[in-house]
Length: 551
Image 1 (tube, helix red, strand yellow):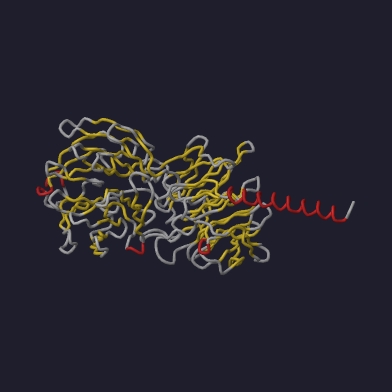
Image 2 (tube, helix red, strand yellow; image 1 turned 90 degrees about the vertical axis):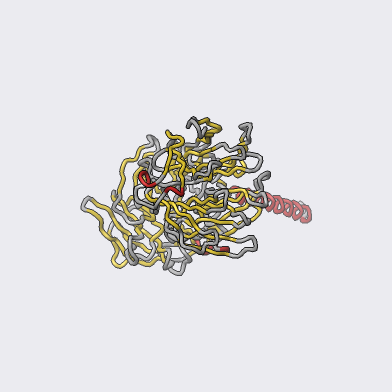
């Protein structure tokens, strides 16, 4: 063969190979995001602003988004740099000022049309907020408190207590008859209140003019009147209903996925419904036609676990308000199990790990660790003896839990045996846990260390430092070759560690991880986690971007 001809063919082969490899690499890059979740970290209180945009509070995301009501595009956001911290509800004042409540801090914040901020402390649990037709401002407490207040719209004069122990008065609205309407979360009913009849006493049934408007709800979350004076309500069950105030009769307008949180109504009497668990916003027209304005999905993906089922990989993601199961190959959602803030025995999971065919769930919000069988939808074990558990795995038949603790300095990795709880190692903020046979590792989010806590079934005292200098390490897993994988959220990357040498290498960069925690949350918020399937596929959750990666 002529040398030039050979070189030409060789060059062609190299170019072809380069193209094929480049295409494969591009396909891999596209394939790395297996599941895209919701655009917001849950959608909570909403209202239409003077500019015609739909304003949405996101409690978990610590932001307020302004959305185009026609396209669904998020056109602007207010976040921590704008003084937003765990907003749960919002409203607009007569002068166009935006007001919102901060559930954990107990503050009510006012943003004037010029952008100036004023805030006033009311009490922890500050949640629903609304104005009367005459410009009076009302705020109620939920979950962390239980009361109704009237506030000075300038947030200057002290809040006036109207009533206590209502049963969690939630998303409320002022009625055309001059009464305050709202759902009682714990009692399955919607009530109206003559706010001037109340004295602030502990027993509102005695000291307040409170009337039941409608009852029989599962967990009523919010009410709003439309421009025709008709009352509407959303139920956590997924029902959107219209209530006849005179008779208490209800008409179901739509049935949406469970976990509804609030609603808003525009000048054309279109309803907008939000979801705390899925993060969607659905518009319902007066004729009953529905349209998804913001798509839903994962709102705070944390723990991830892989279970093999006949060769197929099911990937489970702890999404705080729910446990989601995805097809490990296609990313299709196969199932979702939801929690309703203690309304069922299944608690809101922040992390999940595989335990044979079962799953171990940890919920720092409820301070509970559970063993759950997804095949039968059954909670097999429930343990309440952990203080803010951040993660949990099975190790040599026992539960091992990364426990933040109830007081500063109490954080540890603890083992639950038949004899009780035993501290394996004190830590600053324990996050990721990984197990391989008799070996146990843990990551410390605060110190940046990865530690080996046990070797060959024997607890190491002190623990052996495998790696140091990581920036907020979170999820931890053992790869098929015995190396460790850790999500380094502070640097937004997935890192591989050789446990025998401590040598590190980067597996993936620019991950959408590291969502900042709001006030009152655990510092890790959702632990962006990593798990390895039998196929060798590596699955990583991205809490900031609401994504599930596959590498």
